[in-house]
Each structure stands twice: as structure tokens, then as C-alpha cells.
Amino acid sequence: MVDRKIRRKSLTAKLDALTMVQDAYDHLAKDFIGQSPVATVENGPIRPTSTPDKPDDIELIVGFWVRRDDAVTAAQAEDLLDDFLSELRDIVFDDYNGEFMTESQLDYAEIGGYNYRVEFHFVKVLDWD
Image (cartoon, rainbow, N blue to C red; front, side, top):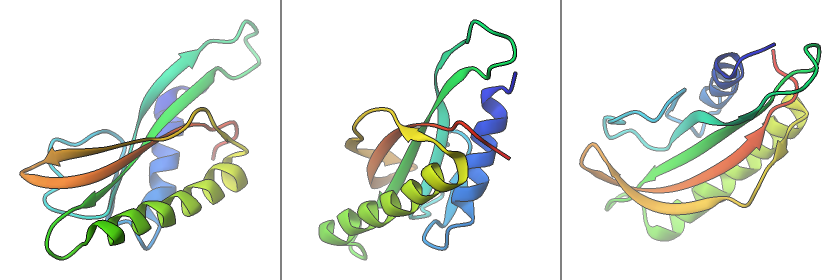
């Protein structure tokens, strides 16, 4: 059985390699130190399988955070969310033979004193490195 930690860290490394991502975390950090855009990968639900040779059904929650300030307009933030989704789709489908489990969730949040626009994606990775 492969645990969530291995899948979470593998996906985080792939997101960290994207040129559009300033940093990627394998957890939700208390503070992004003002960095933007930032990706996070957190544990999602797990459904253990009934056979030991089949991997557990594991979901991960991928967040993409864009700092909203004078340097980034609302339209630019939305465009960055769209660009990230395109990159994430390529990684999930091509690198992991994965799937998106439900619609994304959009929100605003304050992290480390900065306002961020965030979109969460719920993904299942079936193959991993």
C-alpha cells in the first residue's frame, strides 16, 4: 500500500517545478511569506480497498493561491487561476493517470497578512513516481 504522504509529496514536487508557481507546499502553510502564486497539496479523503494488492483510493486537495494587491488586478488573478488549472490538468491526466473528483471551490483568504484569491481542486492520482 502506498500512503498519502508519498503521493502528496510527488504531486507537490511536480507543481513546484512549474515556472508559474513561486513555491509549492505539501501542506497548508500558516504564512506564504508574501509569495505569489503559491500551490498547496493537502490530504483529502481516503477509501481503503478491500484487496491488499490494490492501492487505496486517495484524493488530494490542490490549492492555488494568488496574492491580491496593487500589483495584481482581479482580472489578472482570475487569469492565473485559469492558467494553473491548465497546467494541473496536464499533470493529473498525463503524469498520474488521475482524475478530478468534483468541481473546484473558489474563495478569498488572508494568509500572513496578505489577501489571496484561492481555488481548490480535488484530485485522485492513480499512478505516481
